[in-house]
Length: 182
Ligand code: ABN
Picture 1 (cartoon, rainbow, N blue to C red):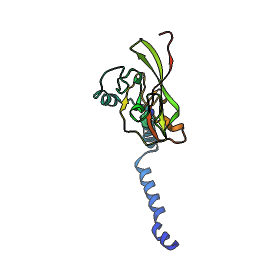
Picture 2: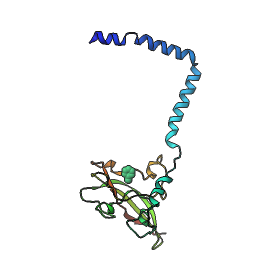
Picture 3: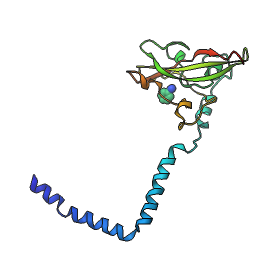
């Protein structure tokens, strides 16, 4: 075995050295540092480039009733910042997980205006976890959402990540507060 490996790697050091020498002759140190700096700056900037999420929102809009009081429609007022499968279309309700799934320990909170009383409500979009992804209606709305590089303001996230069982099943929309001033 040793003889085989020796034969396989024979000359490897010499070839690597020759390659390094050729590269060093072709590029000056300054140009190498410049290129490496450019590469590193480019990769560091990549996550903060703006990206268009319009397509996601439109996909959901196309097939909806537009009724802000229809809990099965993505246009239901409480879903203004939801990103997920509706649990009420997956064997649960708008506030409870389907059997066998448990609510995520952390959740995304949005603020939605209820057109029936004109007040703003805080809505917690908790994910239900521990079962395979449900195939019920998927809604993507993004009121006050910001792109992914501000993670705390972004809703396209699997909130089951803090649970023991991280599999995402569906999302509920629970009212957790009302803006008294509004
Ligand atoms: N919050 C719903 C979700 C789950 C997994 C991936 C993206 C969004």
